[in-house]
Length: 450
Image 1 (cartoon, rainbow, N blue to C red):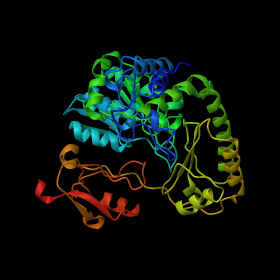
Image 2 (cartoon, rainbow, N blue to C red):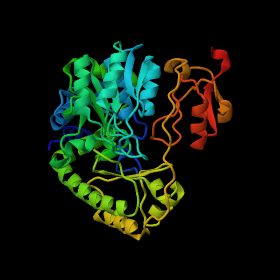
Image 3 (cartoon, rainbow, N blue to C red):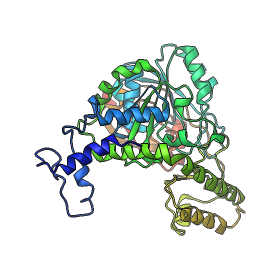
């Protein structure tokens, strides 16, 4: 596969130019970064400019658009955060209402504050098992749109952090019937396009999303910060670069962009075979985990992610982490009730052997599991997200927080659903839930603000 960006930067290095330009290291070094630094350049002649791409960066974007089957795909060196900001700005502008899934990333909450958006919350169904966030139902989205016809878009996260997949195709049909675009945070799903055929086509670009974003660095071989904004509805293409540049750095990282080109090559040549191996290895691990009493997400889920509900076998987070690390396994995440392991084709066979050995070494669970967490309270929105986020704030003990207005979101066990969002009035039920999750303090709006 062609690598126009790599070729352009390599040609620049080989010219041995006197670098009277950023960055300050001038491509020189004697430490462990020495091999990387020559490739860390700025927008010199021949290397293109990200927000005005017409050379190798445009060619790379067009390559990604072909790989994912989109109208346009934009490169991003600012992670999915920048893509999320751009999506919401494109579809909603400022001061609009938007139907939003409650388990959204903090980046979307911050974008709502910056754009003065009013969230209309939809909550996932509890259909993935007691220990995991569930899916968004088409009926819940339709009800939210019926109740708020002023909403400009629907914004959901799928897959979620635990790999749970919502039925985006059915939700997209609901959005079309209501005349609004579906925006999807697919940060954990850049690889979904390259899964074995038996898993269908779960990538949002294949499910009717108007806009979606991928964090390439999460599941593809790109450096941290590499991401893609997929445009599936042509009407959003003309303004996308302009709005992305409003939120993003004017100095995008060329090493990150070069790593995105590497990910494109892998997507075209090795990803399908890699995720075939991963899915089969994790299928074996899931069978072992069930035998040992772990809870697994029920229903449609990402086969390249292994989410283990250790609370179901009465393990705590410290015990689960110590057990994994005792077999030289470092997980992606350990929360209060479940842990997450992620794999790609770059994981070694030895990695999966260690995992199976670790699972096999556990005794069967003989203890009764604790009760799963109760449903989250539904709170009154006392201030807008923007008003709360930009308010004067103070810290407050949770036991004294009833009646106060939250200044920020509180996710005691991220990346679960936030118990409290900015601008919501904390009530007694929220206090009890927060205390039960071990939260001792919250940030609240100072009383003099309203």
